Length: 282
Image (cartoon, rainbow, N blue to C red; front, top):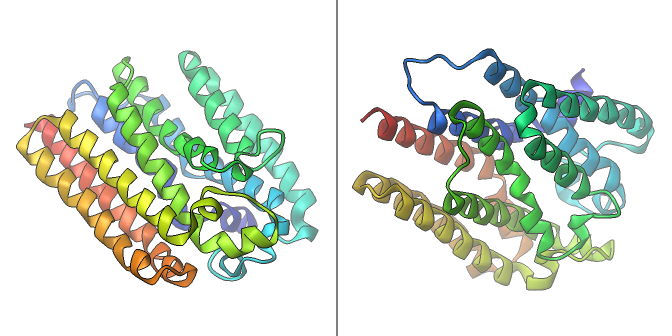
């Protein structure tokens, strides 16, 4: 069990679980109505099994790259080859579990299918978006799928298309920046990514622009002064966080900032959730 939890990257659990919680809060018709039991089941699925699926497939498919990557030798422990057979079995079981979860909400089968296809296809052929510059970043929209699922589940409505686009910008920026510390390792493995194409500064500037776009669109759609203030604060915060990386122009500088991202993303997610709660209540 310890191995399964380690592979699922507990520090990154918030990236799937957080959007689901935010989607449920944003879509809940009334706070006097307690979420139905299906919400609890989906929450558990997005807390551990979904994270295991995403990161286990990454460890299995990218062992060749990980051997050159210092990030995977300490900060993120990759799965060693002697455990790959066991991990494949566990991965198949958990993927089937997620597929069977469609029975909980049959009308959302397309979101669950999309999550599984993009989650597995990011690393595995024939899709292997990881090796397709720009598509690698765009395919990470699946991190927002739990939020869309939670929203539709409790509201019965589809999310605002502009918010979906903002989520795409945010997910793409997060992925692209995470690839910056891997540029050298990916180049040694002959792996082309958005970061190897644009370089440290080019990728980081693109991410800064995408973050501002994501929060700017969300602020525009909020149509409230409080929303503008909160979302402008978050957008500018991400922008300023990446300024030192542009100045230094090195993978080492990017990795130092990248290590803070779980805390930064959790904090910004909490602020965003509190703002949605306030907006819904008042």
